[in-house]
Image (cartoon, rainbow, N blue to C red; front, side, top):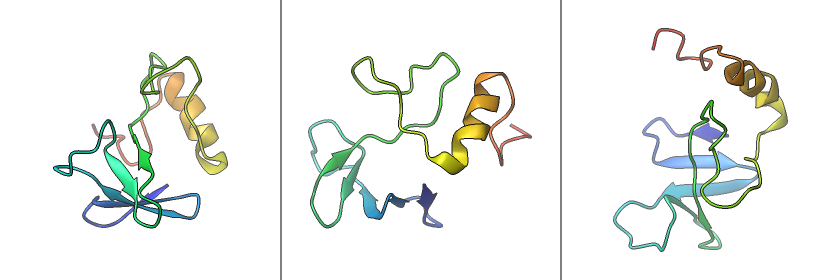
Length: 83
């Protein structure tokens, strides 16, 4: 996942997702600009409560899997080593 410089747009699996603040969406913080599909994007949590609802785990991109596993073991997130 990549974000724009302002963090108002996310790029994920070929989709362009725009931040949905103030739009009155049911339960999403981003929406797909082409399909209006709604998404909830959240940072990782060590207690593994990453998902919004349900028992399934989060979607972790292949290139982020090693960093995610290291984070779960106590390492800082890449780019946030200083807090």
